[in-house]
Every structure is written in structure tokens, then in C-alpha cells.
Picture 1 (cartoon, rainbow, N blue to C red):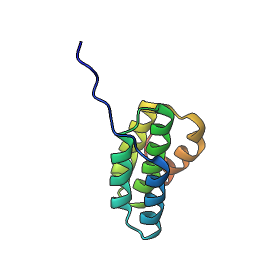
Picture 2: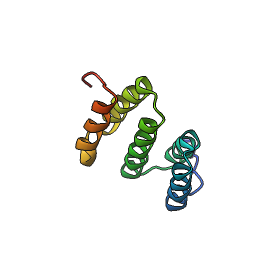
Picture 3: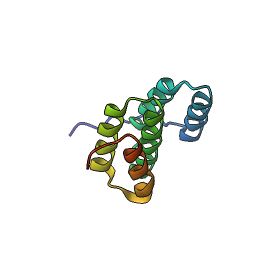
Picture 4: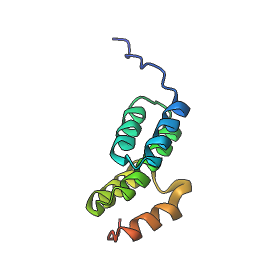
Length: 100
């Protein structure tokens, strides 16, 4: 069998620092792009869930309600509500999402 390609290790903490700086600067699209890049590079489902949640909060700030609702529905389908259930519900309510 062919060997599974290995991914280069990602410094998630450093990436989150970059995302925080981009968020503070109001560069939400750039922060989202960084989170997507990092999430695609991690194998740990718990880390991927945290990155996905952070991406959702940024998408909420980017003020595109139709995309926000679709994003949160996808997040819930992939990861379930988990520890962020209340917060996700608040984000979906503020974006006036219909039922998931």
C-alpha cells in the first residue's frame, strides 16, 4: 500500500496569534483564510473544532448572514454542538438563521 503523505507540522498557537492580530486590525477575511489554512493542516479533530468555531465567529463579524448561517450549519454537522452550543446558538440567532 502507498504511504499516506505526511503534513508539515503546524504551529497552531502561532497561527492563532496571527489570527488575533488580523482580528484586531479588522481584517476578518484574512483571519478566516489563515484559519482555513491551518485547519486543513491539522489531524486532531478537537483542534479542528476549535479552529472551525473561531472561523465561525469571524464569519459572524464579516456581516454576511447567509454565509454565517450556512457556515454554522456545516460546523454543527461536522462537529456537533459540543462545548460551544450556547455560543453557536447565539451567533445563529443574531444572524437570524432558521432552524439548523
